[in-house]
Image (cartoon, rainbow, N blue to C red; front, side, top):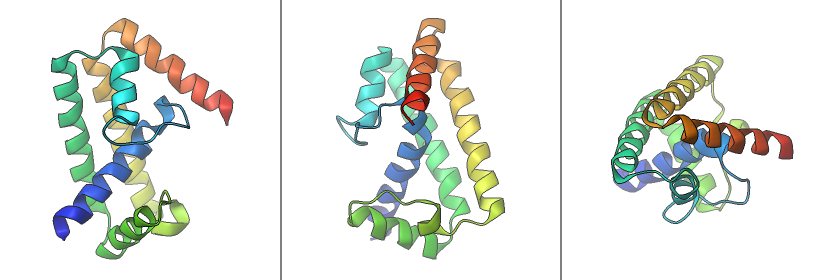
Length: 133
């Protein structure tokens, strides 16, 4: 049960962190946002492996921030087909700041494994996403 909860949490956190770089219509998971990012940027096998490691590290850090109640709320929202928002998780200001910092570190680390051309493409994808909001 804990493993299933962790998987739900991991998917949610990763989708939040990558959301700024991907189209709004994409869904996370196999063949979803992750695969779309891999395809759009033309990631190599080595880069895909590094991305997976970065995501796992980020998920672990975020998991350590959330309370058991917040993890349960996230799981409930996901099981209902909703994306957990701020109101769902009732994050404290400290938790929001920690999450923001983890996402920023993730983005910096992600750009560290990308080529200059891939970074430019990622920036274009992020800007396109911002323009649609």
